[in-house]
Length: 255
Image (tube, rainbow, N blue to C red; front, side, top):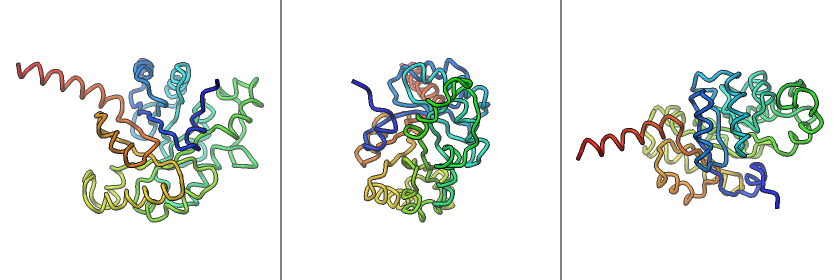
């Protein structure tokens, strides 16, 4: 029996859990791939990972039977085209604050007539011999996630999630709090109210609702699952590494 794709799981609002890769060494992707995530996102916005490194990471992630996403540095045509040509299964786009910006992201992923992406031959198209297969895959399986991380995005959430081609949203709590002048104050009532507005809009419209849970503690993730979130980023590579090291060393020193 064929396993449902990430796109199909999003459409069915099934729970998927992934994580973030910010360290560009191939071993990091291999190690993270042993944890049982559904997808891994290579972060090209807040890391020093290069496009060349990202292509290698995409290949490793996909070789482990997982979906490889890219959080692109910005909603820009050439950046998104290159990431998709390098073999990403989809993108997470930061600072999507309007329906117009959401449509731009979709346009940059898809070929005409659906979008406006330039057609080239690279790794994604098997260096020229798999263009037809890739074109068919792109139209049905490529994933576009809009990050909701600004109060403007919150205020325009209904229009953003109604944009054809947007497969879901991912709330970025830190930037959202910053846009309210409350950087890092994730429990502030204004921040919680903004998150609740997005949550209600997505649940009402039956659009996949995502959140990046920064803490590497599973009970924090479970809280979001219980609240109806289905596309969940669970911490990131250096948090998992650092937290385990600190916890175990702290326990050792207490003896």
